Length: 588
Image (tube, rainbow, N blue to C red; front, side, top):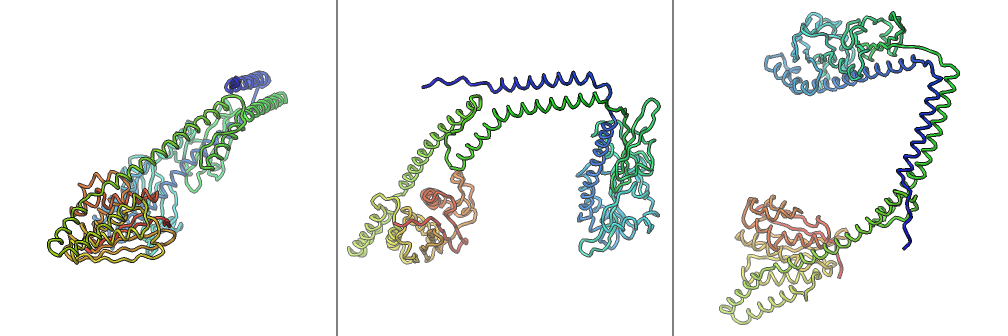
């Protein structure tokens, strides 16, 4: 074996290039700063003020948008609709509407109060304070027309257009909208949703600046730094941000203002500003700094591309290729002789180990399945043989040797087909022969209470199925269905091919099964077998879930087919039960 080459350290290379880039930046900065004596601040301060103003405006607009959505929920609230539709307002429907609206109100913060006004002037409200209501104003056509002109849309106003004011705490901002009946589209009332100025204060605090305030278009201070409100003027009631330079006595400052769209709210920002002109020397220094940065970035990018990005991309492509192949394969990719090569080697070692584990796991699973199939086969109890021999002995005493001979012939045929020379899979025709012999012997015991019918298509008789697939189902039909019902019953076997699958159906006109029992039978959870004591219903139905019976047969077919969706159970309690197996058809 050849000696492993000593790999270069990717970490060391990265550190070296970063130190080089850092040194270039520091040297360039020190050289440049010696020439930079003054720098303009106007654009910077303007951008800063615009950022803060837009931040406040965006937060407030988002909050208003949330409240608009909540207002729609209020208008659709069942109790509020009943209140608006009622012939008259009563204490009962007012309280119901108040509690219904409170459920919506409690879902958010900063919401101060909600008023719902009917067409007849009656109203309900819920809020956090005491309010002065100008009933004369909100009954006026001018006030109503201002809201109704939006045709159900929202309109933002201060203090509900002076119709509602808080008596114990500041002003409120109102979202007003007309309410139309969802069915008739007729006007049923007006909604006033009021939020406090705490929403505005939170929006300002989120910017982390004390140089902001929000005032109304009428000049009323609402939130933020109140000293800035004195700079309010009509020019700031604008849809674009307006900047104005002022003289604050010691230095120049900038006042920026902007009206939040579709609201009576103006955001003001106070910013100290110093303006200077860049010299040619400063320009050259900045250009030099930019060139050095570009060179440094190109060097770093080239190094990272050659030593990190491309090798990792190649590794990723190779891994994706093995993923699509459906089998883990070792990578064969040329990579730099560094940590990435170690990563590739580690991956290949892991792939080899995982493939080995997969092979071991598959072999173990096959062994487990074979063992489980053997256990299931060995679980068949000999009670049928004993019962049959007892029946034959009884016939020998009462009917003579001829019937005994026929019974023994039938029993012998049954066990010849039953044993099937140890085969696990047999043709469907042989399974049908087993069922016919089995039922012939059972008829000797139970007489005419069993009526068997067969509807098996010729083209499926030679197809392979697991041995003893139908016999446990027929046994269950007799012992847990027909016999307990106390009257003659039909057992019908049906077989046909459809869409490449073999459909085998066992029907009996016995007691049927409860839905809970059916769900347990179809469950793929192995723990269900231990939960039989919790199943309600006849004891006979419970027995279907244990031993070699129906549950065991379902598991055998699932193993045989390699999937879970192989069985359907249809039943009506007291009338019938029908079990259908759907398995891939296998010709002999």
